[in-house]
Amino acid sequence: MKEEALNIEKIPAILWGEESDRVYISVHGKLSSKEESRGFAEKAAQKGFQVLSFDLPEHGDRKNEGYPCTVWNAVSDLLIIGQYVLRRKWSYICLYGSSLGAYFSLLAYKDYPIQKCLFLSPILNMERLIKNIMNRFGVSEETLKEKREIPIPTDETLNWDYLCYVRENPIVKWNAPTSILYGSEDNLTELGVVEGFTKQYNCRLTVVDGGEHWFHTKDQLAVLDKWLNSEI
Image (tube, rainbow, N blue to C red; front, top):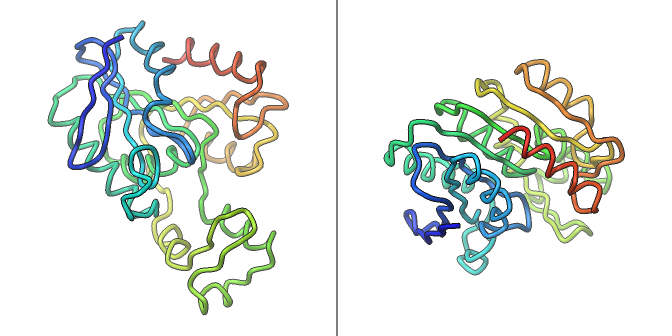
């Protein structure tokens, strides 16, 4: 499969597949990278698509940039990638977003001409997720506001500005035809949140009984493989 390394306004990216008028923007999740889109790109290439993947801030080749993976930085980068795609004038633009990448995509691409969207274990309500984490570790909103940042035992940091941003920028618009693959044991997004989003935006939802947020076991990967073959 053809693989072209790109640098899109200092964002490391890869364009996978032979020349085509159809493309998927692939937005990876936390702790992943642009290279991990290879498997998806191979499947998409078989159906005549190219795939454009890129590193989110603090991921892949960008770990030492000093450019944090905040929601506002990520959305800014996704908009840069989106403008690049529009300039290339692909006639059929699709989206594949995983976990955190799906959430960033919902904010960045709500007004883009997305023809088809696939979400794997998407984060759909970031404010709720942050509040759940705060409750888990006994952090009140007043304390977070006062301290601005609070490290938690999961090697992450709660950030007041991050919470304010997601609260002030709720997901209120999504027009792309969307299919979602979700595990019933997902510990980041509750089933009710996914079902609510699916109903509001008329999505196709596939719930994998016993599936987790991270699809990694042999059986889970087999389900993911089958889903991608069907949905791409």
